[in-house]
Figure 1 (cartoon, rainbow, N blue to C red):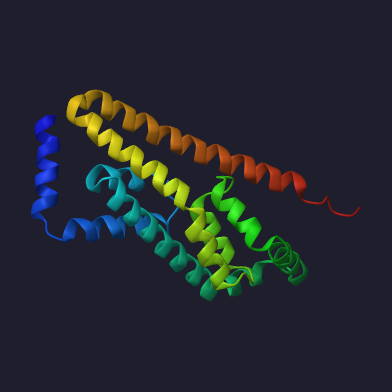
Figure 2: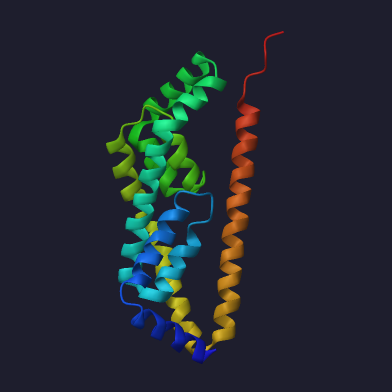
Length: 200
């Protein structure tokens, strides 16, 4: 196990800038597709340490979120408009406008809705690009620091107790996946319950 850790470190040192490019691209991609963002953050901490790893995690996630927002704004709104009545879409727009930056920032700071879901849904609304950008930039800082530093700590633990570190990593990733699934189920249930019943 110790030889594996040394081999990974040697691979990063010998790869030039490619390790950073791949890590950045992977983290950015996870911000676009529905995949738990905790894993790449922890991996960045393991590979690059707490400071550089957090910078990569934060900036790549921010870029991926903005790409999702722009794609949704460009292609998603016309598509959704085909399936929703104008008054339903208008009500959703009014809720978003009324919530504004504080509401979006609260969603970023509390994991009520999955990170990627916020990125895509926000693009469907009249929310300004600047509001989306700065609330995302600020709101993801705590999570980026927490999970990246956790990954860095796991790397240090791996050097001394590799089996314990691997078991702990698997447990943390599994826990994150389960939490995300439970949050999505509860959010979907609340949305279903809150829908008004049709008039008789």
